[in-house]
Length: 459
Image (cartoon, one colour):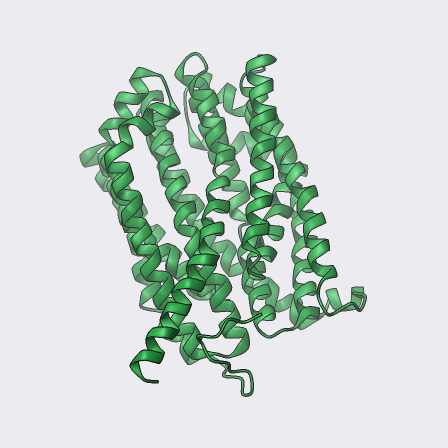
C-alpha cells in the first residue's frame, strides 16, 4: 500500500475510532454519576460519617457488581465478533445467554445479602458511625442487583454492536432518574443516606426497563427473524466457551476489586477524614477512568469486529488509532486535574478537614490518567479478541505486586505510600498486557472473501 493510501486509511480509522469513542466516553462518564451524585449529596450532610458511609457502601457495590463485570465484557467481545462475522443468530444467542446469567446471579446476591453486606463492611473497617451509614445504604441499594447486572449485559450488547449513541441515551436516562429521585428524597423528604440509596435503586431498575425495550427494538431490525429455541441457548460447546471466558474475566475482575478494597481498608485505618478524602480523589480517578474507557470500549468493538471478520490490517489500524487518541485524552485529563483540582475537590465536599486532606494527596490523582491509560487500552484489545486468559494472568500478577508494595510503602510513607503503590499497580496492568500482545495475531483466523478496503465506510 503506497503512502497516500496508507494516510487515507489511517485518517479513516482515526475518524471511526473517535466518532465511536466520543458517545462512549459521554456514556461512560454518566456511569460514575450514580456514585458521584451519592458522594456529593452525602458530602453535604452533617459530619464526615455520612460521606464515609456512602463511600464505603459504594466500595461494597463496586466489589459486588464489578466482580460480575464479565457480564458486560464477555458480552461485548462475543457480540462484536458475531457482528463482524455478520452472524445475527449467534449475536442474539450470546445476548440471551448473558441476560439469563445476569438474572440468576442477581437473584443469588439477594438471597445472601445479609451475611454478604455484614462481612464486607466488617472487613473494610471503619468507625462505628461510618458502619451504621454504610449498612443502611447497602441494605436499601442491594435490591437493585438483578437490574444492575442486567444493565451490564445490555450495555455490553450495545457496545458490541457499536450502538454508542443508544448506550449514551440509556445512561443519560438512568442518571436523570437518579438525580431527580435522590434530590427529592434528600432535600425535600430529608431521608439522608436512605434517600441517596433509594435514588440509585430506582435509577437501576428504570435503566433496565428502558434497556430491554431498546435491545428488543435492535433485535427486530436484524435480518435473522427465526425464533430462538431453548436447545440453542443451552448448546454445550457454546456454554463451555462462555463459562471459560466468564471465569477468566471474573478472576481478572476479582483482582481489580481486591486492589480497590485493600486501598479503601488501608485508608480507613488512617481515620475518617483520610477515608473520605481518598474517596473524593478516587471519584476523580473513576471519572477519568470512565472517560478513558470510552476508547477502550471502542477498541473492544472494533477489535472484535476485525477478529470476527478475519481482517488483520484492520486490527492493526484500530490499535494504532485508538491508543494514540486515548493517550492524548489521558494527558488532557491530567492537565485539567492539575489546573482545576482544588475546585473539583470543593465540589465533592464542604467539610474542611476532608478538603485539606484531599488536597494533600491530589498530585496522585493528577498523574493517574497517564499511568493507567495503557491498562485500559490493553483491556479493550484483549476483551475484543476474547483472550480472557491473558487478562486474568496480567491482573493477578499486578495485584500481588501491588499488595506487597502497599504493605511496605504504607508503613514507610503512610497514605502517600498507599497512593504510590496504587499508581504502580495501574501502570503494571498495561505493561503485563503489552508483552502478551503478539499472542493475538498468532491466533488470528484470516477469513477469505471478507476483506474490504480499510478506508471505505462499512454499513
